[in-house]
Length: 218
Ligand SMILES: CCCCCCCCCC(=O)SCCNC(=O)CCNC(=O)[C@H](O)C(C)(C)COP(=O)(O)OP(=O)(O)OC[C@H]1O[C@@H](n2cnc3c(N)ncnc32)[C@H](O)[C@@H]1OP(=O)(O)O
Image (cartoon, rainbow, N blue to C red; front, side, top):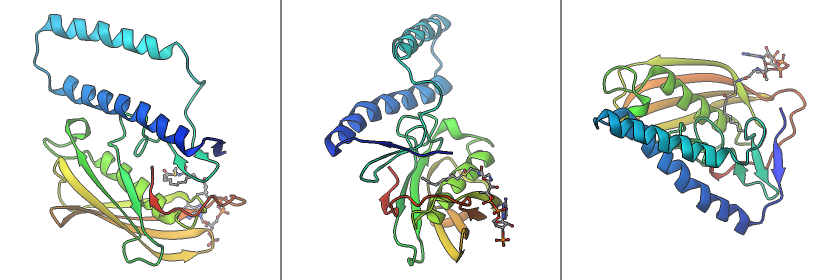
């Protein structure tokens, strides 16, 4: 598993953000609209054709395979295909993980609003999505020293259904021992905990440290 460096200036980076963020936001709107539309069949058929045309236009020039996890030379993260935080991934909620310091009581947190695309039980967040969000925030909290750490184990305790809408995740890393980090997190809605997570995150043997993480994850 290799990380990729792209030699972008800050201007080039911000230009790409300005180009792709609105495209992904528009696609996210489309996902929501497809789930909730009640227009007639002819309008649905017409929309399907229009979407196929847009897809063909974007396919005119493509990279082979996935986007990868890229960083600029100065250490700016560009995990733009990531399933949870990806700036170019419309199925990502998207989550922005705000990282503090490893000595803070809450080392990382994220606020996100989940809509119709994340439903499991009626009006509530799918359990797999709850786990997905926890995995990312815990993984980032564990990796904050700059040594990327991957999920070894992840246990979720679903205390009560999490309603769709705004929620917060707060992560803690109570134990760091060499390549292993124990990380815990809580999911909160209106200040009440709906789910808790605990995971052991491990940095693979021989992994090269990245720039220590700080600030926001994208
Ligand atoms: C830019 C970076 C941002 C990072 C944020 C990412 C967030 C996303 C989080 C993810 O979704 S990561 C993807 C899901 N996880 C994986 O795909 C991990 C797949 N597994 C592996 O790659 C390896 O099995 C792993 C890196 C977890 C461990 O391999 P190692 O070869 O480094 O482990 P090793 O055998 O040397 O064991 C080291 C220690 O960890 C322990 N260990 C290994 N695997 C374990 C495991 N799975 N669970 C619990 N403990 C484990 C092992 O017992 C041992 O403990 P001791 O030091 O006490 O002896």
